[in-house]
Length: 41
Image 1 (cartoon, helix red, strand yellow):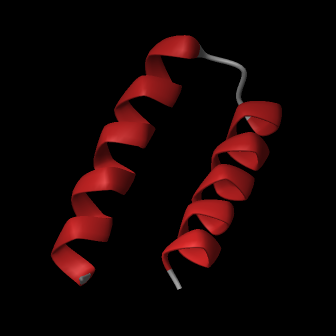
Image 2 (tube, one colour):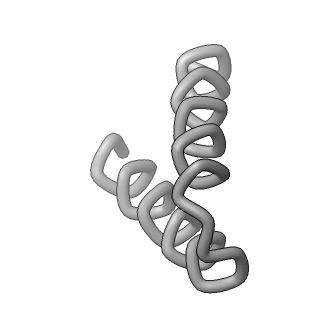
């Protein structure tokens, strides 16, 4: 299960990166994603 979540996260990050190539936004988005993942679990 953890592997799938990790894979999903990477795919989402890649998609977001392709849509909006902005390092700052990516970092913020990554932090928010990690926080949300922990909250979900």
